Image 1: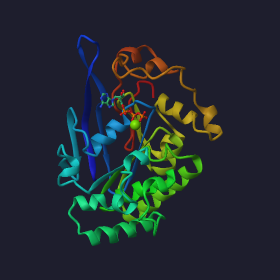
Image 2: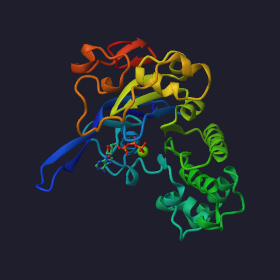
Image 3: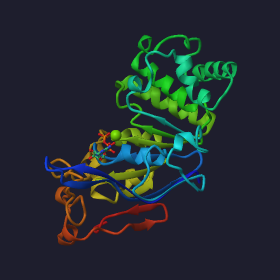
Length: 312
Ligand SMILES: Nc1ncnc2c1ncn2[C@@H]1O[C@H](COP(=O)(O)OP(=O)(O)OP(=O)(O)O)[C@@H](O)[C@H]1O
Ligand SMILES: [Mg+2]
């Protein structure tokens, strides 16, 4: 096991009004899960449900308000990137343009994590060229970010994340900013390099189809909480939570669409004012009385399938 989260909660203090009344927003609430070595674990949910916050907690970029994040069995220190975990955890973000320094050539950008570890200049250059070739950008290390396409820039970000041979890469919506044809190339690349270099991925996306393509196990998140955890096939064939069913109903693959009721219309509620009981009940087509006042427990349907729902 490379990563374990135990009852992790992250609050953000917000000033609610001009008069300075403060309130806490729970971006992530009581989340527990683990990630095995070399695994690709998916995290899926709508915009604002807390995926990026959870990714940053898992990567040690953000300390939890309560609970523990264990990396390789040890609590992750606050400065994850500057500690013993340096180089062992890397991140890939949604927008490759903002992740790359426009003044650095690709080779220097890619080598930065090695430079931070004090590697010699020659070593940095040599490894950067090898890893750039591995992502299909061999010989282009001297170019600058503006001389690459969006898809190529994301390849640079992938190369940069892999250069330290990390044990884990948090991929936060790595293909959301790319157009469809480049998306699938980039996903294939992420899969290839995972096979070659062996890191575990925590793979974040709002797109169930993308997560289904990449991940053998999937966590479904709603308003700061994990509501279902299952192997991909179990989730796609037998989603237990009505929210997972609704997400699957939007995957354009024919039969699935008819099988499950779509979401009750409406936006997800604000994490500042989460509904009582099951947070999903106002949008749930199956909600009953109990759902309105009691938060469902985390239930085991089978050893590899868990759900937080009164009905399933
Ligand atoms: N630094 C912060 N300060 C205050 N609130 C924050 C902060 N970061 C995130 N939030 C809030 O926490 C909630 C979860 O945000 P987060 O970015 O984790 O969601 P997300 O699932 O990644 O969304 P998206 O799919 O749009 O990227 C949101 O309500 C957001 O406004
Ligand atoms: Mg996000």
